[in-house]
Image 1: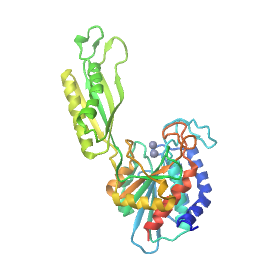
Image 2: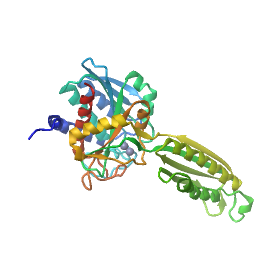
Image 3: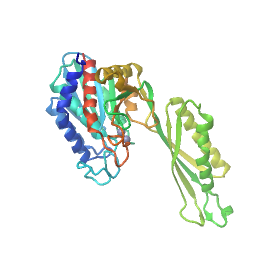
Image 4: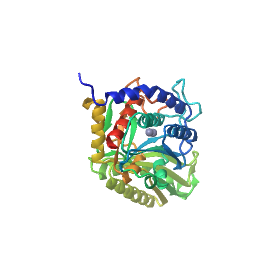
Length: 393
Ligand SMILES: [Zn+2]
Ligand SMILES: [Zn+2]
């Protein structure tokens, strides 16, 4: 029987994986929220330096870039991992569970960091390549756009990358599988804060006031008609009213109401249409109820678009690593990811890594019972190592 060309790579990565499972558990026990990743970035920087990487710190506050050059080739590859945790109280009961109340690695970024460190060691100590490897450890993926902060600090000017890649673990996908898709893969995320200004009154005599509550209710219901009646049914948009705050008791017509709205789309034109229509709809509704209104609309993460050539490159690398049967087409999801900012500036792709099914890694991310699956660590590390080695030739 002939051995697959990547079998020896997989064995070598498997052999060093236990060290990185231990590192993963250390990071898991000490979760840090957005821009607080000091202990984690210290650990990353120390490890990279020990293997001969030139280490650059402080991009996007707590970001770390490790650069390793081998040979005289002019190609440069970027691989990114995220380091931040979430404000969730962990309920896993694991012996390496979070030691910090109210903070938890519930999205597996501890795993992503350990995967890239494992690949970093292998690539530094065990193989040759020809070119420049830039390993990007970013802060604050959750909500705060750490990727954008690193870009604003000159990430790609200081560390030029021809292409850039990242991965995320995927509960519900078996360990050993890798998922790819070209084109839009994750949604844009925008938020709108609507304030309706009315006039307070006694609840028994509402005609003396102008009631923002009535209008708020009408807006909450009416907004869904933008999705159901104005967007092509074959396109995607989600408008979620996540918060509505007005008044405090039974017998008072409140002065004002505030509505917080999250918007997700997979297409820049749909994104613009939804923004325009939310503004128009809210303003017109407020006028019809004789209220003053304000809409603060913030564009946050862009649509994550995987570039066709780089997605195919990643797909072929994955096929060589785990075989055709284990490389799946992953449909887009309406979650968001700030790696989208990096893909706006450089070609690349975002890959899904199976985290397991059911009891074995199937718990969804952002759940207090979630844990990254250590069995996926060597698969991810071998994937990065193989991608880097085959790209930097
Ligand atoms: Zn997350
Ligand atoms: Zn995540």
